[in-house]
Each structure stands twice: as structure tokens, then as C-alpha cells.
Image 1 (cartoon, rainbow, N blue to C red):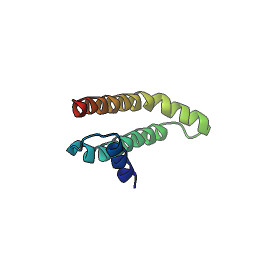
Image 2 (image 1 turned 180 degrees about the vertical axis):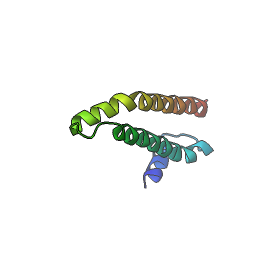
Image 3 (image 1 turned 120 degrees about the vertical axis):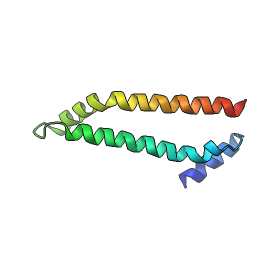
Image 4 (image 1 turned 60 degrees about the horizontal axis):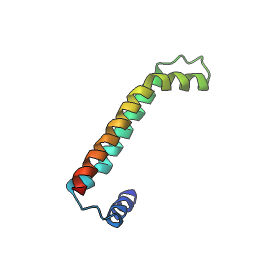
Length: 87
């Protein structure tokens, strides 16, 4: 349903159909899954005697840089693809 909504939104925005438009949702899911694996691995490395807030704080201190780089890469990818579709 989300893919259909996104495709409808792209039609309303008058974006030409391209093969990458069909592949993009799967790329987004893959990146999101990778981020979750990073966070789970970071939580597993923390000490179990800490409180939940402390464990999550250490998790984000460890994984946030990787997640930020992934998010910025995705943003740049979408920006570049958008500029090619508009030209």
C-alpha cells in the first residue's frame, strides 16, 4: 500500500516513470534494515547492568555516526536521481 501511495504521489508531482522508481522502496528497506542491525549489535555490546536509558545512550553513541552517514548517503542519492529525472 505504501508503494502504491508513493507511486501515486510521484504521478501527481509529474515525475516521469523510471526503473529506479520501482527499485527505490527496496533500497530504502535495505538501508533501514542495515540501521536496525547496527543498533541491535550496539545494544548487545552494552553492559546489562546499566539502565535502559544508559544502554540506549551508549547504543546511539556507538551507532549514530554510521546511521547518519547512511542517511546522508540516501539523501544525496535521491537528490542526484531527482536532478537527472528533471533534466
